[in-house]
Picture 1 (cartoon, one colour):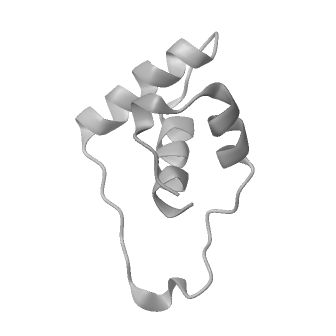
Picture 2 (picture 1 turned 90 degrees about the horizontal axis):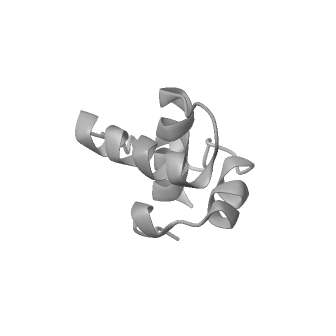
Length: 69
């Protein structure tokens, strides 16, 4: 279920980060494109939830998982 990214709580992110990125029937060719500003917004939101460094790869993973789960 997709939630607005800026409304995700730390508990939501913790649930998402353990879900698989691969999806059954992924052969449909569905792609997800995120802009640089979406990634920057995701990083900024995740920084409010986590202390320390939030890596681009982690933010991109959570963006993708939020789209497919």
